[in-house]
Image (cartoon, rainbow, N blue to C red):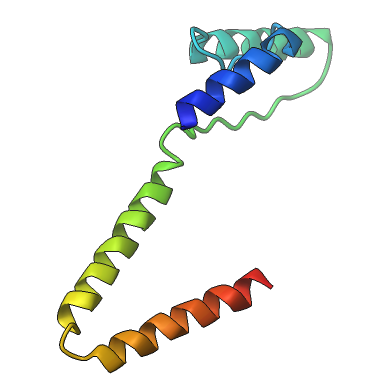
Length: 106
């Protein structure tokens, strides 16, 4: 689904993006770094000023969502397996989860 959505969106916005939009297929991090360094050097060359730069890589930043989902799934599986003989406990846990979800969505 993600790939299909991404392709559709890219087709809609690709012609509206400027040449300095680097987070696209076939554009490398090196290209944006060269451009950024050029801009910094040009600014520093003009006169007394300084530049502070912070670089970060978010490529793996979204992996945390998958890890949280895996941990949650593992917890629920273990909880159900460890309490399968106590249906009352399972129903109370389900009711608590549903109540909490309803409360959060309000």
